[in-house]
Image (cartoon, rainbow, N blue to C red; front, side, top):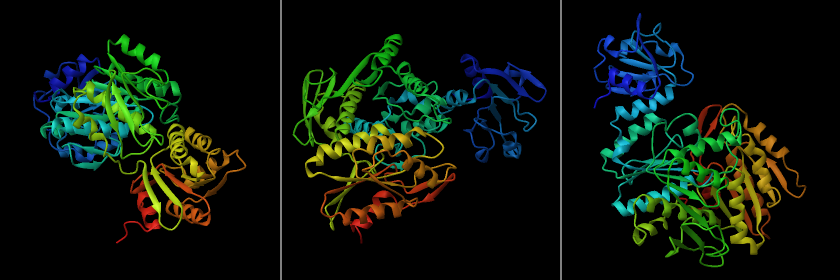
Length: 521
């Protein structure tokens, strides 16, 4: 059914969001009093630059009336806003209590509720969302002949095989429903999407119920004035996925798991658990799906589900934490309908690699390896260094961490990255990472100031390529040691955000390949 002013008003009223409709001097709750209220909208947008004849415009966030200059000449059909904008446009306005919630509901309606044509999986957690999403998509693709779409912080995939770089971990609701419609039209059966805390904080997934929700883990992150003021607020936003899922997959060792189980019980949502048992199959928190090491160096793991062994798995991605993600993906895919005896589908996770995640490079000129990863907070840095000691501890690694931290947000990460690493590494190189307005050098100097261990050295080099170069030369100068360079935070991204601009950047992976003389033509 086409979305019209009349049907939009009805939907908003049903969700207790509509305050009134304003058109000139007419203020009403009855859309029939507005001429053309049954005319279908031809497009929906939140960008005045893309308004065309017949568009419905969502005025969300810090919207200014001046943005409406010229929209009447473009043929704006109506707008949705939290305030009267009739002085700036002749188009009728749907005045609502919350423009973001309204945008999510109306966008879903405009695109014909594509979520109803897909089995939608939503994955949240402090770490592991992206890898778990890719693993889950791989299983679902294998089980459905390539009919699984993906929304992730790295890429979006709407046809099961074509991947394009994404802008947000969870898209704006209008963009999400537009892409869902494209995925459904492409014949997709499944959609796997990462769900950030901000997605609930700013209502990007308002009104969306996941067929399978997953809560992987939780630890303090994204605490800042522009994100979450407290850990409680961060956790509360992530917890919302429980009541908005038909079934939940939960990390058995997740902090506050008892509270999340209470959420599920209150919403009558069944729960399936997963866990990593590094000390052995029966040495850990009981769970429905478990993974445990199959060999001494943890390069392969065995999995079991519902008490039945699924066999051995050897992932292309290193790290114990990725076997936890694998166990989560198996639990999620099974909850989405994949049989546990479909070995071909389950083992589809093994060859999966993700650019910028646990990418390993060897220097032909010295006893040095480099690992490029997106680790960016206490939990992920701790897990990364744990992996280094588990895999290479017998070689007494000399570890250098090349890191920065985001500007204007998640300010707690700056100290926590240092705390996670300083007693376990030899050297910090602090450098540029994405920022809005803060100068790189200020963030780096702040991070350097948090060092308390007198045995760790540190350098501040704001240019990221130069910082990595310095780390490589320093490792080669210590050729008597086995050196491990951890290049974290940017992965394979080809830009650095500086003062709200995306400045082209070679990419950590390309920088290290060039310095090591790898893949050079």
